[in-house]
Image (cartoon, rainbow over all chains, first blue to last red; front, top):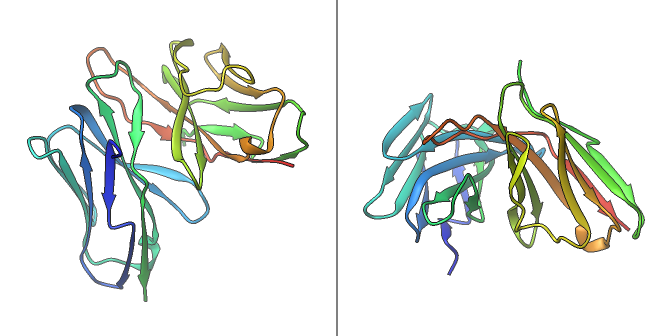
Length: 111
Length: 116
C-alpha cells in the first residue's frame, strides 16, 4: 500500500462543475502539499497545509489530520484547470524536507 | 519574477555518456531538491541540500549519480555513465526552510532526458 493514495486517478468534468480530488495518507505528517502539473510538464505548488482549510481563488484545500485525509476542491471548473493534481506529504517519521508523492489525478475539463 | 531555472531543458544522449543538469534556485532559498519523474514511478526524490550541504541522497543510485552545490546559486546533478533507464524528467525545486517550520517548494521547468 502506498503511503499516499489519491482518488480518482482520472476525472473528466464539464465546464462549471464542482470538482473534488481526494488524498489519503498512512503516516503522521508535518505538512501536506497540493501540486498542479500542467500539460506542458511544469509543476506549480498550489497549497501547503498542516491543518484546517486554505482558499486561493476557485481552489480550496482542506485537511483532516485525525482522518489522515485531504481534499482539493475546484469551484466553477474551467478547461484551463485541466492538469494533473498531485498530493505530497512530509512525514513526521523522516527528518528534513523529504516529500512522498501520490500518483496524481488527471483532470480534464471539457468546454 | 523569481523562479527556479534549469538547463538544459531537453537532452538526448547515447548510453554511456556523461550528463550534467544544472539548476539555479531562487535567490535566498536555502533548500534545493532534485526529483525524477517517470511514467512508471511518478515523482521521486533523488537528493536534497540545505545551506549547500547534502541532507538526504538516499533516493539516488550512488554508483552513477552525483549531486553537488558548488555555490548557493548553482546545483548540479550528474549521471556517469548514463543508461536508457535514466530517461525521465528531472525537476529541481527550491525553498526557504526556517527553523521548526515547513517550507513551500518552487519547481523548475525540468530537464527532459532521453538516453538512447
